[in-house]
Length: 341
Ligand code: SAM
Ligand code: SF4
Image (cartoon, rainbow, N blue to C red; front, side, top):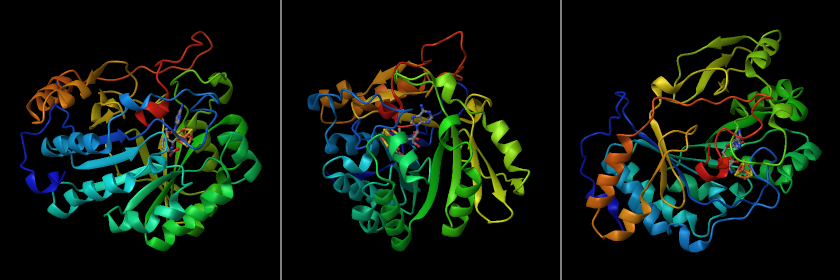
């Protein structure tokens, strides 16, 4: 299917609080070749294939959103690059960059398959990627990801650099894993011209571990880093929960994603689509809309577009995460690998 030639802009999607929805994150698979301790249980059960949208269906959905004013698309997962034939979807979506219907196509990946795909991603129009690396210690990396090998990810990062991709490293801040490593990570990112974003753990999904033990407030991390690094707040915004600083010593950006200590909902410009076609209007709320049924019910997109409009009309004002000893259960039952972060 080639939707890129048929794009005509519909009225923009404005939610009840006046926020313009221009950013779609799409989880293209719930599967992954890692089992990060904060994200998945080791014995995760994955979705049956029939429930998962085909690549053609995902493309049709993304194209409908682009028609309705989405300017930025991020593919995520699970691990997006382990989905079979994923490059065909990425290449087709890349055509919307050429027509000017889309400003940015990007992805969040664990980096394990980048050595294979970096060049092809650039050919498809991808310019920047986020790569998740929580620690630079190979043993700790194995502990944190259970199945991952740091060496493989480093090979992927080298390929990404060589191909000309701009890289941002995402690291989830975990008390027992990387609390003492941020100086090294800042230096390493500086040497490689990578930006770095630190993320607070979010209470999503049952993972069989106590999150209170893992939680590390980034306000504390920032205070500590400021004793050794010159961090200057900069106005760079993505419409999401990250707040950015520039590190004087390296010239790279350092972002802090603090959903638990900071309220960022008033500028939220995004919605999230799962690989089963469920649209979540807020990362921190369970309310969702099924887009798979209208998608599969007819070949034209009228039903689908009506369902999207109805869903955007329900986008909530904000979320209410809290990690506390009183509430042992996750705030939201689904795992991060469902909505992709
Ligand atoms: N597999 C890809 C990756 O790891 O980059 C994409 C999907 S992953 C779910 C997206 C991001 O969510 C990663 O940076 C990961 O570290 C983060 N993440 C997963 N579970 C999280 C949690 N409970 N709290 C905060 N971030 C989480
Ligand atoms: Fe996989 Fe990414 Fe979740 Fe780790 S964080 S288990 S790499 S989806």
